[in-house]
Length: 252
Ligand SMILES: NC(=O)c1ccc[n+]([C@@H]2O[C@H](COP(=O)([O-])OP(=O)(O)OC[C@H]3O[C@@H](n4cnc5c(N)ncnc54)[C@H](OP(=O)(O)O)[C@@H]3O)[C@@H](O)[C@H]2O)c1
Image (cartoon, rainbow, N blue to C red; front, side, top):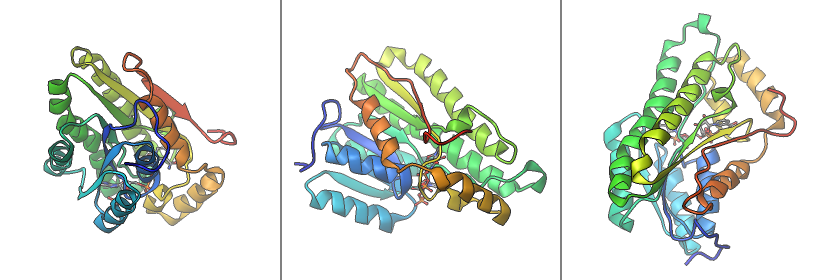
């Protein structure tokens, strides 16, 4: 049993989180676990995942860690299958893994573009593909996809990242409409600047310096975790489809 406080709609749920080795995913894992969820953690840095899972397990929670690269469907499927195998079902799929190596288009950083498309878009689609068969069979489930303020607005220098985050919103809204027969809830969470390792994924020194300035006003990652908990803890017939939040000080 978890020693933390419990919340209706979270206690006992089986939650798969991609990108759980740092930042938003890690914060969500900690909060949901403290509120009684079993968490199944995926990311590439398995050491960090394992130490998080060990810490949560030591405090009485249920947690599993699996090395997962979301650009490979078979690995995402393995992560979701492991959740079902260990806990019998999957209640929530949080497609959170993402990166932001932004730069102006004329720098032609095609490898960065491909990586953002592969992780931020295909990774989300693979998460949906892995979880949907279970949720269809269960006739219940909740898919939470992480977009961004950049999924609502585009800014010079961050075009490809914004395109991927707009895509996440389009995919999520279409998915919402298509899964009505299966009683599946869908939530898009679009954070502004949150203090995580995300700016480290910027590959150009001048862009990174600009990004560090933007992130001076970043808020802690538990802001995201609370948004996830809010969406999850609504009654089953209430589907919170979109949450957009920013630091109070953020203009963009
Ligand atoms: N922080 C913000 O201000 C902000 C604002 C809006 C949206 N977001 C979105 O929030 C999400 C989480 O980012 P974060 O801010 O928490 O940044 P972060 O601390 O850098 O975390 C990113 C996570 O994604 C994982 N990841 C990256 N590539 C992956 C891959 N190929 N396969 C599996 N996992 C992968 C990383 O794990 P490994 O490296 O161990 O694989 C890490 O756990 C992203 O989708 C990001 O776009 C963040």
